[in-house]
Length: 315
Ligand SMILES: Cc1cc2nc3c(=O)[nH]c(=O)nc-3n(C[C@H](O)[C@H](O)[C@H](O)COP(=O)(O)O)c2cc1C
Image 1: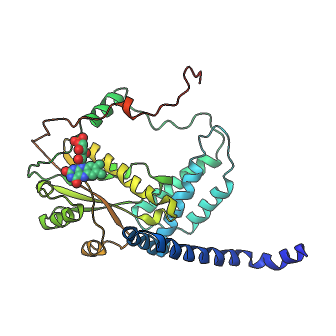
Image 2: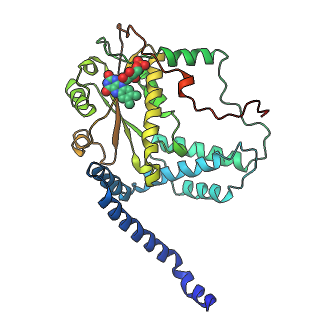
Image 3: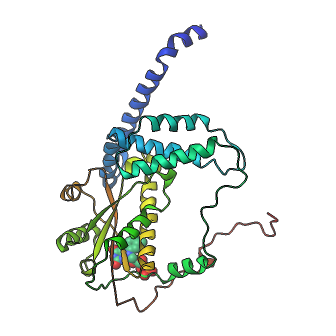
C-alpha cells in the first residue's frame, strides 16, 4: 500500500511541494502581518512585495552564479576536502546560459571560471598567494582607523573622478554575505539634490551641501530573500560605508556617515531608482581644512569584552 502511494505521488511530488510551500508562505505572510505592531507593517509589506519581484533573467542568473561560485570557492582552502561537484556543475550550467552584457558580468564569469579551474585542477599544497601586505600594513591600517574622523566642514574644491572611483570601488570590495554584493550607489552633487537627501537622512546642518559629493549607499534586499537573512543587506551596507570612509581618509579627503531616517518610493522615483533599492546611509565627502579638534573617545576593551576563554589553553 505504502509503495503504491509512493508510486502515485512521485511524479507530482515536486509540483505538490511547490504549491504547498507557496501556500504556506502566503498564509504566513498574512498571519505574521496581522500580529506585527503598526510601525513594522509597512516594512514587512515592502519586503514581501520585493521578494516576489523577480530579477530580470540576466540579473537573476548573475546573482545565482555569484552565490554558487562562492559556495565552491569557500571550500578551496578547507583542510577537510569537500565534494562540491554538483555545485560546480551548476556553476558550469549557469555560465553556459549566461551572456555577458555588463562589465560586472564579465568579471563574475572570469572569477567563476577561475574557481572551477582551481576546483577541478590537481590538488595544490599551497593556495596562490595573492593577499600579501607590506610589513608596515598593521601600522598604516590601524593609524587610518584611529585617525579617521567625521568631518563637518568642507572646502569648495572638487574631487577628481578617478579619485572618487577609487573610493566607490573600495566600498564594493567590502565583504558581503556569500559575495552577494547588494550594494549600489546614488551619487549627487547638486545642492538641491543634496538637500533632498539630507531631508531623508535627517541631517539638519548644512555641511553636506558644502561637500563636493554626497553618496547615498543603496542595498538590494532581493539578494537576501529569506526573512532571517534580511539584516545581512544592512550589514553589507555598513561594511561598504566603512570602506568608503577609510579610503576617503587615505586619499586625503574628509567624510561623514549620516543616518537614513525615512523610506518612501517618492525618493526612488525622483532619482529613477528601481523600487526595490533601499537607501541605508548618506556619506558626504570633500576636501577639508577643519578637522575636528577633539577626538571622540572610545570605550575601553575591558568594558566591552565578555571573555569566556579558557586560561592556559594550549591550542
Ligand atoms: C549609523 C551612523 C549614523 C550616523 N549619523 C550621523 C548623522 O546623521 N549626522 C552626523 O553628523 N554624524 C553621523 N554619524 C557620525 C557619528 O556621529 C560619528 O561617527 C561618531 O560621533 C564618532 O565620531 P568619529 O566618526 O569622528 O570617530 C553617524 C555614524 C553612524 C555609524
